[in-house]
Image 1: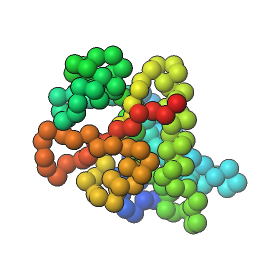
Image 2: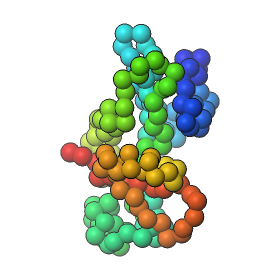
Image 3: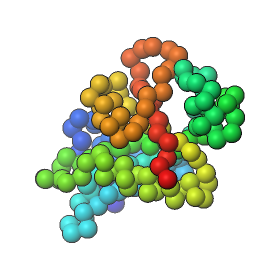
Image 4: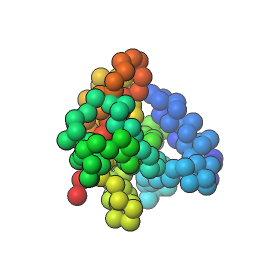
Length: 166
């Protein structure tokens, strides 16, 4: 299995390759996160993958309104800890020639799984963290993600969120 996972290539983000090849199986065994493969059924190539986990965010870390806190929490506009689904890794395999997958298709599969999890365990929002790269941020915004502005400026990862679609 590991040799199959290590065929994944994402030259733009070597961390995606490293996670899938070296960490995803162990994270799954330890129930830290679960990794899902999008496979070409004809030749069994890995077209893309994503990993999911539950996490919580501290509302005090972000410059967000009480209305958004209430929406994310589902109950309390003063919530300090908000449970969310974390899209921990998401990537396309560039080793597959003419790979037809795109972010929209990956997110479609991602939200199919998140909705199944939500039906069993709840959750209203999903988050992801991405590099502070304007084109990457614009791409996620195109699919409905919004930036959660942090209270600290700096050259750090950007947290983006989306209400889980019905």
